[in-house]
Amino acid sequence: MIGCILTGHGDFARGLGGALEMIAGQQENFETVCFLEEKSLEVFADDMRNAISKLRQKCTGVIIFSDLLGGTPFRTAMLEAQDFDDVEVMAGTNLPLLLESMVLRYSAESLADFIELALEAGKTGLVHAQLPQETEAQAFDEEEGI
Image 1 (cartoon, helix red, strand yellow):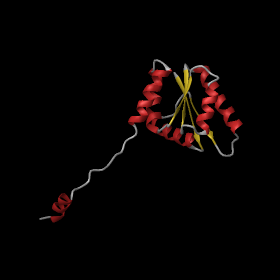
Image 2 (cartoon, helix red, strand yellow):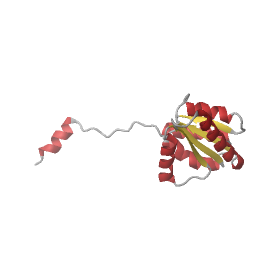
Image 3 (tube, helix red, strand yellow):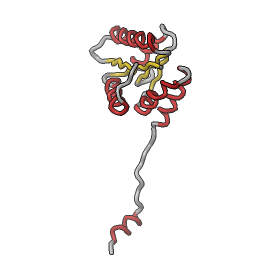
Image 4 (cartoon, one colour):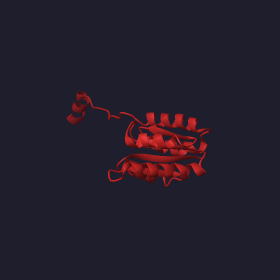
């Protein structure tokens, strides 16, 4: 199984992790590491390293889902991941990506395969939905009555 860490600015990880749990139930081998204003960068880096180490001991690989490419949580995850084998980092995490990934991680043949499938899930989860618009003629006909 692939272990997962969710990180981001403020309560992003805790909030998105809570939404995931509400929809899909409690997840095994899933950690959240929040980058909070009151937390020093050193403490945050230690928390990230500890989460990676914990999951790496029992999982075939670890993926770190981050909120924003280039942000402090992403950069810290990248730096800490380099000290471990089979740990990768993704940015731009959304709820559809997480939901699909929690299922995919059980059957993925490799960490690289899992990342490819997860990225596709994140992309397909991003849509612009619109309600159908009535034309003026339709609205007039419906209002006319008898």
